Amino acid sequence: MKKITTLLFAGLLAFNITAQEDVKAKEILDKLSAKTKSYSTIKADFQYSMVNKADGLNETQSGKIEIKGNSYLLTIQGQDIISDGKTIWTHIKESEEVQINSVSEDDEEGISPNKIFTMYETGFKYKYVDEKNSIQTINLYPKDPESKAFHRISLSVDKVKQQITEVTIFGKDGTQTIYKIKSFTPNATIADTHFTFDKNKHPNVEIIDLRD
Image (cartoon, rainbow, N blue to C red):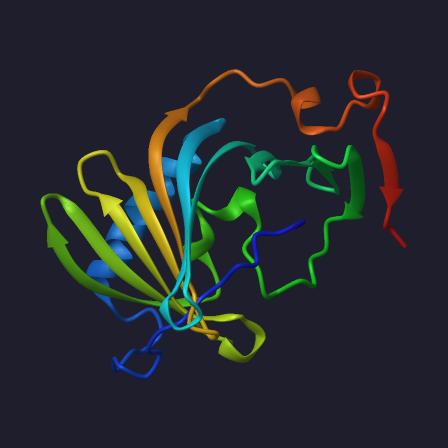
């Protein structure tokens, strides 16, 4: 689980979309990007759901993420996924093992956890959908759909706070992955050492190095 690759389904061809031509969507995303980039760090609690009616899948869990530049710490599903931007440590707590991987720039299917709040900046066409109760909805469509495991991403943006409140990823297999942001704390002080795995704190773990 070095990247969040649980990605999902819906209609890519249901809209007549042209790349980067939706002026309203671009205005909203530009403001969101500027606000997000102004933060030195981000901490967020979220609810993570996977739904696939055809397969009878409906699972919900809670998670936490801390982001500082290209580094992140994601806690979800009994795992800590830690990265300093070059290396990823996946600590599977139940089995007391740590898998080590290198960050790959070639893995185009998934969304890296540290990009969850800025994923829209490159590689997408976008279309404004609507606004309800100060929540603006924008659909994202990958410019290179063949390389992705999903057709569409729906972003919900708080117009007042200029923050993402929900991300829904529609995968090609019919599964929807939904991230609902429960709390969002910018500019918290986080030491760089927080984004590496400290074996001294976990002396009994088995280290599995999967790097080439």
